[in-house]
Image (cartoon, rainbow, N blue to C red; front, top):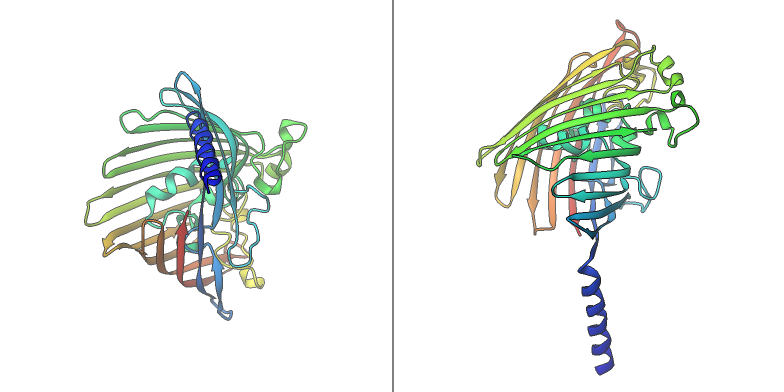
Amino acid sequence: MKKTLLAAALLAGFAGAANAQSNVTLYGIADVGFLNDKTEGSKARNGIDSGLGAQSRWGIRGSEDIGNGLKAIFQLESGFNIDDGTSTQGRLFGRYAFVGLESARAGRLTLGRTTNLGFMWAAGIVNPFGLSYSRSTIGTTFGYNQGDFGAGSRVNNSAYYYSPVIAGFQGAIGYSFQSGTAGVEQEVVGNGNNNRMVDVGLKYENGPLKAVATYAYSNLSDANQALNGGEKPQNLIVGASYDFGVVAAYAGWSHIKNPLNNVGGALVSPTGANYANNFAALHSNDNAYTVGLSAPLGAGKVMAAYQKTTASEIDGYAVGYVYDLSKRTNVYAFFNDYEQRQFQTRSTYTDVSRRQLAFGLQHKF
């Protein structure tokens, strides 16, 4: 017994010495629930699905104090499906994989795989559902998520700089040598053979007010640019939210120009000729709008949001409720209903609706 206590004390002492210079944290989310998913013209799908409230994940992040207020940082984050144990994003660390330097005075620099600024900064400000709750997310209509600015909004081979926060303002700029757009993961010989990307953003947070603007420009490879009519995709997002205490209000606008991929590409499953959507090949511009509200209710909050696009003709709403069982565990329910136009030609199209009803459990660790 004495030997056990002595060993425990020695280990605790070594851990304390290490933590004085560096810090490593294991974290994650386990999220699963029941989903009823119905596309117009098809039978409903019912099942237990992972990541309905937020994608299940585990990760490791850490920092080391290297002196003069400078820290070395890293983050490795992996998505997984808790319903069947498989990985998401097709790789071990598909969500984040970067190393960098950080200083309170100079800001933060990361090198590796991260997310574009529309995903990282804008989504949670312009819509109460943010990045979560399946198709309730703002990624259903906003162009940052349709694949032209990193597959699934994840940006490979990137360098991002984030300024320090000054009077509530923070800026960021990023560049990718091969973003992962169109399924190409690594840089190849010749700049014109790579899908390069420039990403800039500015946000403001001060008490109840949050505001954001992001702009992404995808310099496609020569081959993909030819497929896109010689054009290069661009996406601008502007939005804000204000928390009045009894209710929080959200609003946002997204403009996408020269898309290579369809806006809302994952909204309706291509199960037949009437579901084939040629929007990106037929239109060079699209605008998306969202408004939403959230309010505390009991030990949780209720959310509601509306989204609409102009050219791609996506129109729908979502409502949801999250109830906190503890600081790390919650249960939730949501419903969404969207309609999307499937373009065969500019004048030949089919309007198809799709809705989801879900109940789930989420635990953070």
